[in-house]
Amino acid sequence: MLSPRWTIMATICAIQMFLQVESLYEADKIASLPGQPQVSFQQFAGYVTIDEKQQRALFYYFVEAETDPASKPLVLWLNGGPGCSSVGAGAFCEHGPFKPSRNVLLKNEYSWNKGANMLYLESPAGVGFSYSANKSFYASVNDDMTARDNLVFLERWFIKFPEYKNRDFFITGESYAGHYVPQLAHLIIQSNAQLNLKGIAIGNPLLEFNTDFNAKAEYLWSHGLISDSTYDLFTSVCNYSQIRRQFQTGTLTPVCSRVIHQESAEVSKFIDSYDVTLDVCLASVLLQSQVLNQMKYTENIDVCVEDETTRYLNREDVQKALHAQLVGVTGWSICSDVLHYDYQNLEEPTINILGLLVKSGLRVLVYSGDQDSVIPLTGTRALVNGLAKEMGLNTTVPYSVWFEGTQVAGWTQVYTDRLSYATIRGASHEAPFSQPERSLVLFNAFVGGKPLPRPQPNGETKIRKSNGHNLK
Image (cartoon, rainbow, N blue to C red):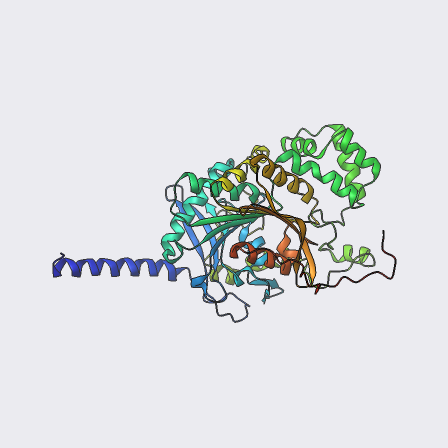
């Protein structure tokens, strides 16, 4: 039994530890972002030092759930690139609580913090506000380094926010996060880190170099963006994975150069390859006047939100409110100008890591915005289906539609209770940007461990016929 003296000392130590943690917590609290509407949830932003000796620190933005954050899971979001900002792209362009518009922030009605506490991380160092004072770090960064730093970040972030340590935890991301997310999840399992990791979700992810990139030619051809003759060149002369590989190594051959130039001429510079149906942001007034009669902005989507975000995050008052600083760069950019990533890592498949995660008991969701030609749904769907067959997983939900409200929101297929695939109808490479409501439905179902909404058996979802002109 402790003596009164030791009891008092233990109490004092406990209080000191509590105050120290609280000071870490409060130092990163955001009073208010410039131009934001009034909200009831708390926001935090700041740095977690990864390497004291090299002065390497990663920047984060944390948004508590809109309602009852104590009962909601914690979700980490990672953007891809490699080298692009999760804060700029993920939080401010896609599914964070606000979107910049001129000099103010507009409330995002489909923010993912409606269903979870959202943690956005700018990784690796050199991306966004994250930095290394030792610039030699930027010379050659790879997947292993990124995964290790991300794990150190999490372990140290939980010291600042210990109340989230045992919370249900999910890792999500898109694009090159098809590498970041499964690699981090696998490292957490391998290292026996004491995190309550429940699953991962990745959108339009790079999983296997040849399959993913070679799906592009058929996608463009089937959507009418390239001619039959150009499609034939991709299938018989030089395919997309060859072109991407040669371009990365600076060895683009004349024959492959001719193929890609013919493709570019047919697709044109007025199409966004990340969403072949979405209008583009025309930065130049002169350029707008030249094509205004051919194009108009989509009514409900701000196609220039990336430009708005860049302007907003480069404001001194915004950086002060975020407790952010620019180290070794003259301005914040949505994708890094200083980072030199090892592009050989793109060739390392991660589809096999998904299999290891499923075997470990994690839930894995892979989803595709179906208007993306960069990582088309056909390649991703084939990879997930192939993985399920290889693992001997039975289909528990056959390929079929899922709904948002009374409309088809996409298609899904589920293999046991741990692996699932879904498309988001009408969505881009950055699905929450172009289809925010449907993306939120998918996200809430995933973190809640619930099935996606299906058509009602009583026929409540009515299909309007087209005046007798249906194809038989």
